[in-house]
Image: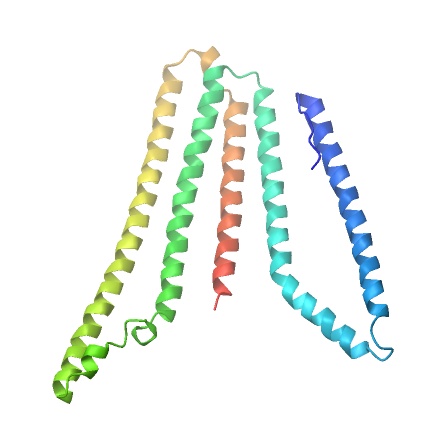
Length: 248
């Protein structure tokens, strides 16, 4: 893989552009080679092979759907990463002090952690609903107990089985509830941490000299970056939910 040494500013953008152009050239060559290989393989088919070709194309298209969605998802993430990187550069153009740079990173990190915990909780709830619909007692590997079959009294056997089933189902419910409560608690904890951090910063800003305060432009850029972070994590969350919805 091509490695590019990045130094700063304009050189960084030019290096990235050069890297992208080189990768596109490599991909174009790979596509051309794939077309050539496909043409060779088609020539090996019988003359009356229209149905075979259609079947192959349909098979490939169906199996590429998942891959195409993954690629589109990664492209979206690259766009968000690029936008966030531009906002970082714009922030540095405001000539912030080391403290102001550190403050911006702390705020964005807190926002990211808050969003991650929120979407983790939401995804867990959806996963639990999904798995509960699949993991019914009758489908569990422990649903059948050979020991019960050895009980000759049918009424006693049924009684033991009902009690056993109730215990298993209640345990399963308790586990799901515990996982949900844990995720919800974590989400609330990070929400509180983010809110506390914002209050702390607002208090500090009021007490700082004007020369050390975040400027209006800095606050605006931090807010825009926080929005991009939120959108990026929502994109990841939506992709995971979509993947979950097509699982068997």
